[in-house]
Length: 400
Ligand SMILES: [Zn+2]
Image (tube, rainbow, N blue to C red):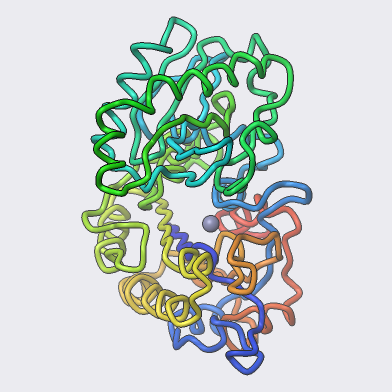
């Protein structure tokens, strides 16, 4: 038996007056997802538990069958796994953003989306001056770098309250610093970074070029390595993950899944849809399970761009869902699950915790009587998973 999970990030939405009260999913031409819903099972699932901040990390942990309330520790440790950093049990990994700050205000959470090479040089300077046997800085991608506090959980650094820099744009820095036991030492690192960065030659050039300088680090998103059993231990299946997003690749590594990098997978509108489908089908030749994630609909949601969201859904349907279905229809022993990870409603321009539609098609899945794949049709279904992490168990093992 082969299992394939196809996730279109942030695909679910609210009815929009610009679309005459319909959602992007209702308007998009998506015959393949409609086929799955009509000839398989359509239902609803809650991937974001109450009181948990809705994000792709939490949502995809749910989809893969792990309770985020038990296992989610922060994005730092997931990104550390993606960078191949081996965290010890009591280490704490922080996301280390390069930001642009001026007059005690946060102007840019990404320092103008600084390039990875410039960022790596700056991380080297930070390491030289602030690195120690307790604090180690690691270069990542663009502004998204990492700091590991070695043995940091012994000082409770994992339980600090730290604010994501993208949530405090334009706000005063000193009102948004980390809070809790041991916060002083983290705040000190952030403040000392200013002296190292502001006159660094890379930043002087950036200022000359009218680019935002990376004149401060911002530490947040920290946690210990999550103690998750491997996917194989949990389900007895070998598997792989295909995504352009660091967090999901890190999650895949932590779960012992093979992480496949597809050329041209950008995490944006222009991603290589066909390449992802091809890589997924190739991977299934020797694996039991593959998880494919496409970021584009979420990006369109964040940008509030209705047309791009519809196009992203249509491309996902045609080039990924369609390609997989075409191949699978020749086989008998397969199941396919299609879903978003969470909603990214156009009206909110950010993630929401709403219940989302899913559809399953394949062996031993009885055909329902839905009219297609969308939020309204799913509301008519009696299949509902209040605990999102239980859905995949059903998908793999069935109800009995
Ligand atoms: Zn997401």
